[in-house]
Length: 402
Image 1 (cartoon, rainbow, N blue to C red):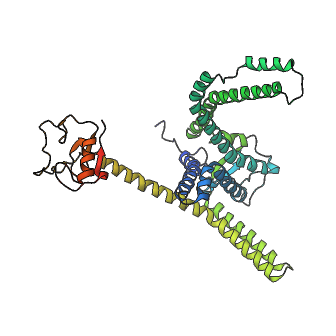
Image 2: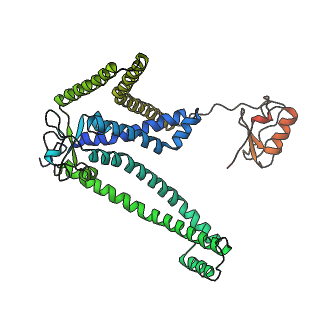
Image 3: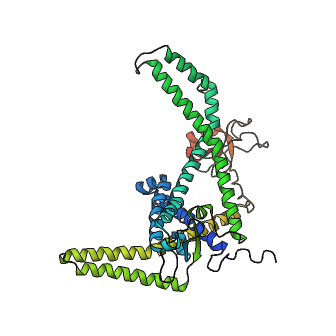
């Protein structure tokens, strides 16, 4: 009974651990869906292929747009808004009571500073982490080859080489275009580049592990109802995540409709020409339509990606099950006919030269094996299989390898 409450909420309006986990994984699934779509269309479109090569930059821009709009409109991230959650100030970094903006029912709204920090931590931090991991993968995969090349060609630069270049530069006080100056700068640049790569290879695993350990501790504390913060980012910003009630959803929709209607009324009452008014109203309605249906479109894209992933995974599993079936019995061999070469009793001998086969070659549609020079000469001159007499071409010969 000690774990009977695991996964439930700490306060009445706090979401469960599994709701937070689902919201956290939604953006990763969306990125996978976008990458899959670009990989499919990239086989036909050069533009999609280039976007796929820079998918981290593309998804960073998409995420900045989605998160900024969601925080501005709903006081929540895009994934949290999908799951009916919102962010409220909490802890020591919450603004004073007299400075807090409130809705009609007293729900606290985020400050501009909290919104900006939320966008940065939800977009820029994952982008930099992905770039850093790519650099680490690149440097670590090439470290062995570079080390062997440096040992062979003497390209490793140590601090003694830098001191030697400085000493030579000291005794040659010409202008900056001299060979000694260029040699000094090249040595320093190579030294800094090599040590930066080594530092990246050594430091990134520790930083990655430390960040995941801290994040795991926050998740465990939230799971065990010991902390209201789901992640260290929430603690740093000074917010917590709460559930939206039915009244909150209805009030939010009503406020949005009132705000939009007031903008449309202001355009209609303006003294601008009629075509200009119609153009502004049409563009504004189009903007509202896209804003209202963006979430639904992205969720459908994720759902379609999951369906395709399930479909192809099932097909691969079926193919793997078929590959594990026993090998079928081969068809019966075509018997030799009279007037052609007779088969020797020893299967390792060639039927043409009666010697041990050299460079064994098979006639593909009859299955008999001969020496390559023997069968090539016979097929080139007579155009038939040496044993069965069936019509054979040079393209029907298949070399066999041990």
